[in-house]
Image 1 (cartoon, rainbow, N blue to C red):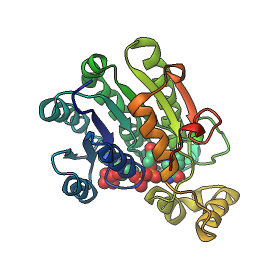
Image 2 (image 1 turned 135 degrees about the vertical axis):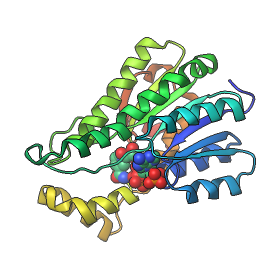
Image 3 (image 1 turned 135 degrees about the horizontal axis):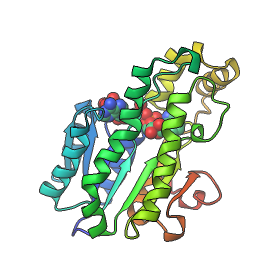
Image 4 (image 1 turned 120 degrees about the vertical axis):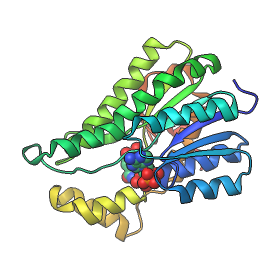
Length: 254
Ligand SMILES: NC(=O)c1ccc[n+]([C@@H]2O[C@H](COP(=O)([O-])OP(=O)(O)OC[C@H]3O[C@@H](n4cnc5c(N)ncnc54)[C@H](OP(=O)(O)O)[C@@H]3O)[C@@H](O)[C@H]2O)c1
């Protein structure tokens, strides 16, 4: 472990990633934030002087994740944990209507950028006996998400990555966590852009929870993810759970 714990959080410009990064910074950790939009990350840097470095870039360009590892090592002296949170939902389309280039771009962001970031990070994670959290989704195993093949299969890959990492790297803790439906920009995009390519009952449900105010807050899953990336319990190594499952709900702190 580094003197002050150091974490990389991808997709830290807003939503779940921003919330997780802020919680880690509140615990006096150091964070390397990654996203395409600078504003949210610059806000964190201003609020927590000396604790934040950020890499502004597209994770579909593998150099972005590699740069985050380099920045963590050179500016902060190592890596104690990574939260692989950045992801996109687009394209939502049936298999018959798949645009392979859009499908591949989603995989570059949601999956391949994780592999290309993990590889150079591994020596640092081994040294620190670090923790890795993959942000997953119920769509990773449920087949009722009509039109969500690209997103769901990328999240299934992420679950498998956690399981494989646990087998291959005895000094590194890995877990895949489903944060559940949350009131974020991704949900707004689903409601505004993708409803016509989804089953009516699914988009009706997502519209309803927003309209009636019952859409869940980001805070509970963020608190579980922070627990996992700071001190993942060995018995959960390599697993996938929903944040509010009986296994992970005891870690909800807010
Ligand atoms: N919201 C839900 O209901 C829900 C449900 C289950 C699982 N999840 C998962 O939870 C995680 C967080 O989602 P969220 O709801 O917080 O989504 P969000 O508000 O859309 O945030 C996504 C984050 O990823 C970053 N990102 C997206 N594309 C990127 C790219 N090409 N390069 C670099 N960064 C990129 C975004 O930053 P920039 O746009 O600035 O690049 C943003 O910071 C995701 O893994 C998502 O799959 C969400």
